[in-house]
Amino acid sequence: MTNYNDLLSEHCEVKFSFYYCVFSFLSSAILLLVYILCEGVSVFGRILYSPEFLVAASTFELCKVGLAKLVSGHTSSLCLPRVPSQEYKTVRGPFLRRIWIRGSRLIQTLTPVLHLVKGILILSAFWLLHTYLTVCFGAPVFSHWLETGSFTALLLVLTAYPILLTKGPSYENLSC
Image 1 (tube, one colour):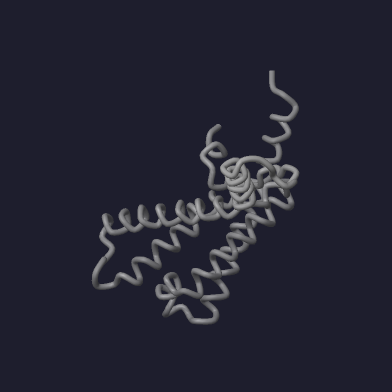
Image 2 (image 1 turned 120 degrees about the horizontal axis):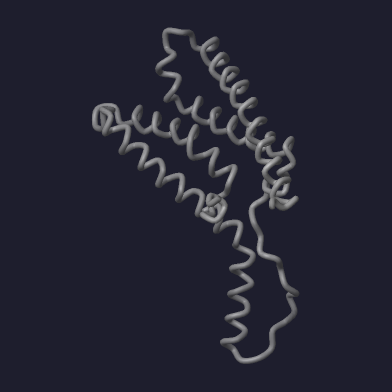
């Protein structure tokens, strides 16, 4: 028998998936159309690995995920996770106990920063994996390394970045 909360969360995930797909279709078409109209069809291949396009694509992905979460009711998941804070009274006792409690309080306040660093490490690991796979499929490494790296960054923005924005950097969120 399914629980009401499980059914509600599944409904929210279906709503999020629908809105994300709709926003993906519209924003990708608009982004490519704007860049093709600005630069011309003859330079379309160079647009895909330009830094401006990569920044615009990652901004569009961030806006798509944020808007889809906002519309589907996942607004609480837009914030970085925080550990519930305890009362910060002065600590009395031995020196090591004071150091231990102050250190644990510092770690509690730095939890969002640690999740951000974890996300950046995950993105860099996936970028290395995408670069390896792209080179295995025949992309040049030494002669056109900037284009290869930029193309794999585009692959990263379109594959791993939305998953990281949607599910977060923790493994528990990815399991069913």
